[in-house]
Image 1 (cartoon, rainbow, N blue to C red):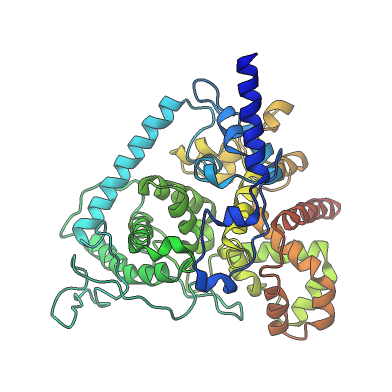
Image 2: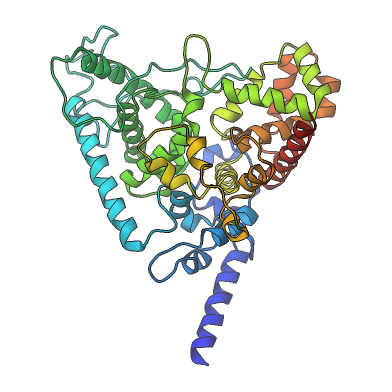
Length: 477
């Protein structure tokens, strides 16, 4: 009886803690600088008893050996998000860092291997630019376009250990208020399969080093601007940590390197995961979902594919609105660029944007995600995710709600939930857009009003409705 009472008391303590998790308390996990309080959107998310994944529920979801009941975890997250105390740990599973069918021992071994790998890559970068790992970061160019070192007024190399970061508050790292996209950074580096060898006389390698060095100060400028309203980034060491992770990623990604907007995706990982290597791998997995958005060429922007999909969705579910937008010369949907590029970071408070992300990732979850990331054949990700379709109801529960809809209808798995989220926002603004929008500036202004006024939970529900409506309409045609 004594043990039973302790269990009840523990459960009641968890319930009381959850009931007390108001928006204000959740904001306390990510405090905002007092002078910035008036400038940030109000947090709407509240942890809810019986819906939000709590620390108690999270721990109970693991077996004795460490196997995770992913179906139960997904159900909770989709209903009410994740409590901040366990958010980082849960994200590692949602993003495919770990396999739910692995043990504690197996995950600890894998985590250690990844930490060692990250340390090796970081050391490789540090040999080229010693500021990396020093607790400082760069905001001024350290080389010219021709590779000549740039020195400070006292003759010291800006890339030396004594280089001081130069804060800059000008501009925004993603897009201007008129919705026009930023310019893409030049592709910089090598793949994750590269060796640690650094051939001194290799022309391609020297070009890679130059392009990477040219990107470092831009990363630094974006670091200064990213989540600057948060107390967390008043600490220069935390800014340097973000810069280090982005710099190492730029060095390792052979096709993209660094592009503005990545800092907005990476920042929450830095805040949620104390270990820098763990934050890197969480960001790296997130980028596997999003990296196509950052691929740019002289002819197109990376997010163009999703914008085209958005146009097709709106044309299907709301043809009158699509026609109206086309008449306003907005048929390319560039006004939605920023929403898709950084997953609504500008439209929600920090707390609400994290809630939005984790619920989207839970709804999009595919149990093949971990194995697909470790597959050496390198086929299309969609082929790997769907080459083992579930044939029983129990297995189907291990898929997120959005993924289950795709599986049940046989829909092409090439549209992210975020695209349907944008479509749902447009549909909710149908009347105003049709009546008041006389030009693209009006469209941008109307959509800009959703900042701080959009409920993430309701928005996601509407996105799922649009998804179902689109599948139904597409099937008819």
